[in-house]
Amino acid sequence: MISITTVQSEADVQGILALQQANLRKNVPVEVQANQGFVTVEHDPTVLTHMNQAAPSVIAKADDTVVGYCLTMLPEFGADVPELVPLFSLIDALDYNGKPVREYAYYVMGQVCVAEGYRGQQLFDRMYQHHRDVYSNRYQLLITDISANNSRSLRAHARVGFEPLHEFHDPAIGETWVVVLWDWQK
Image (cartoon, rainbow, N blue to C red; front, side, top):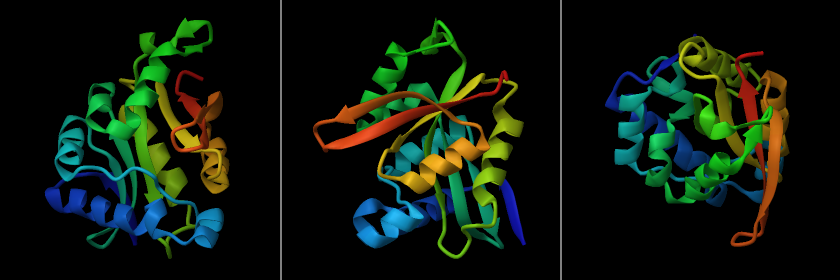
């Protein structure tokens, strides 16, 4: 049986890191990336621990093994993950419904991953619903960005309620990104 919960221990954080390593773009063959997706950011264990102490991430567990995760990343951690600094700067410059995004109570989905062998079992949807259940009383928006090359992730985010907010090209890595948000006020 698979349970959806929040990070409760250092073992859960280590489980996230192990699953992340297995699904990093650099560790996944190109043909698998196209069909199954990938993750791009490699989190520092200490930063990830602090992120989870401030706001526990949602995880899927099969017995004691982490088989899925959705990382909760509060804006105050934006400077702690160098790859995400530009995203947080961009978010601060965007408007949503005629109001600066920075004026909303929001957090960023730091990364989502479901282990091979557990995909197609609605874990993605269930983890995101758990996020809403846990955090919608404190936050209005959940925001993330997705590589335009990661069509599986774009479709999955749209399915649970995310909508495109902004698209940009990162010339440093030659990649286009789509900023999406889920408005929990709707």
